[in-house]
Image (cartoon, rainbow, N blue to C red; front, side, top):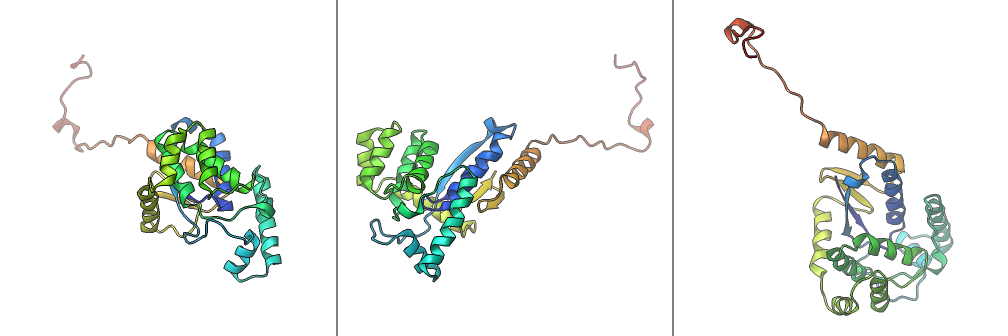
Length: 237
């Protein structure tokens, strides 16, 4: 079974949704048959790489609310994250543009490191308050995960894997993805948002059953069996 996940590294519910899916997979008997592919999505393609604004000020401006209300809203999200086993530090998080982070992940995918890079980027932003839009940090992160330093420098200094990121974004638009996280199971079943683990578990079970159900033989016979068969019980032995 293939699971495609559209997400962004500064999307809190993408991290929460990832953990909830992983929780459901812990009890799924066919986890070893699951292939997960992470897809690129930018919450704000126009976000600046460097800004003096806090995440609260950005949220307040985006949703037209007071900063204090943005703080209360973020505290509620942090509580949900904690329930999923995650620690979110909004007070010190660094808002940034994630395009280069997505390019890094696409490069990492070619080296079999997409899952590790995705988890590390989410943790770096939400828990460790790292600047995941900074190319120097992205290179350090990649090297720490075993990626080649010289190749990383070449990727991050140019426009490598830009087309791959844009392809994912184009595909998301074509299938009607309006928000993330967005999960697609076997190219035909969709789960939108950071749903509870039981929702993921139900979907996994349903898709697995449908995709692996053995077809039942149906018999078509004449009403008068003598017209179609003349063997005795032992004639074909």
